[in-house]
Image 1: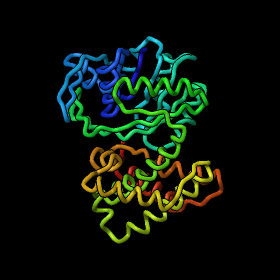
Image 2: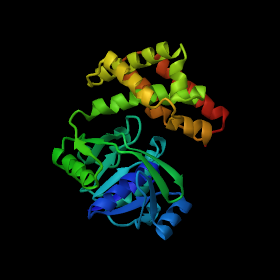
Image 3: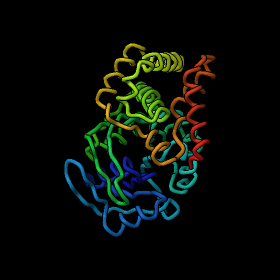
Image 4: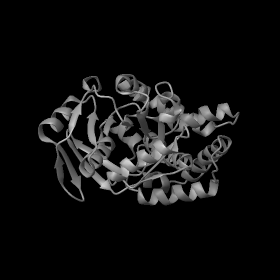
Length: 307
């Protein structure tokens, strides 16, 4: 099978590497960073972490690819998903499956403009990796991937999970994947947004007195909207999960901090806290904490002239 990775940053390269290394599937990395593409094509993809490796794998810009895809794993930033889908539309036919593992939620609203629902697989991953330099990644931890076909094509969804498992990515077909997605969104919607605004580590935020009220109100809104959206969420369970996750990540600067503070890039806030605001409006549920956080992150982007 032909697998494209659309957006070959740290996580995209990790997934592409694992599938290429451990299966007979053909993998092509798609990206726009020319130095990254050139380094991979000329020197191979270098992998560091618990082990060191280097593999030959194709990399190119989306416009340079021509063969129709069996599977496309979209791994671009959420705010660039529409542009990426436009760029790869010529690689898609009625047999192509799309796997979306992006941070946040609401991506299916974009994807359904390009493929039928039975071609869309939503998922969540806890693999962790970093892009150290062009053509070189560090895989930090062994993770998992949960995936579900949202159009009811369970056979296709399970086949996607099988491809991931051939690549030793520890995937499973999860009929309750929306629960996992909402839970991860809550982690990102509390830790990512607040550390980006306050410019601190996860541990530093959870050490201040104000964190308890902020986290409690944010999770309350997430749970109310999620339950109205058909996902069975429990506030205490979510709060306990977030607190436990914060302990393991206490020294970490999350991706939104890295984007906004370190790299002066725009963030995925509209697909995290902003997504809850939009869904809350659909269900006539007020989300004042998520709304002000979304506005503050956008204000900081504008002040910093984030690109």
